Image (cartoon, rainbow, N blue to C red):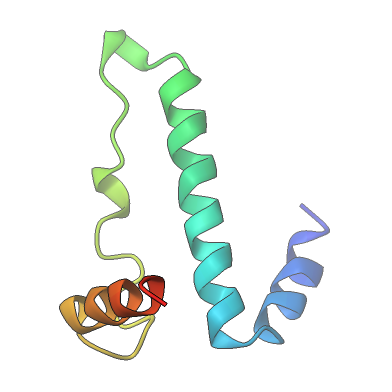
Length: 75
């Protein structure tokens, strides 16, 4: 894919908040695609293969990140 390096260059310019939004959007897209895609041998779609891919992405503990998101949503 020739456009992938261009996309990655643009992604590198994004601030952290936009990177988080992009990550969530990509995850949603992958889940929707897996849900609708036929699976070999009738297996259920699995998102488990992506577990740990974004480890360290936020630069903080996952629970701290969730707590911060929840406190931000209340205002």
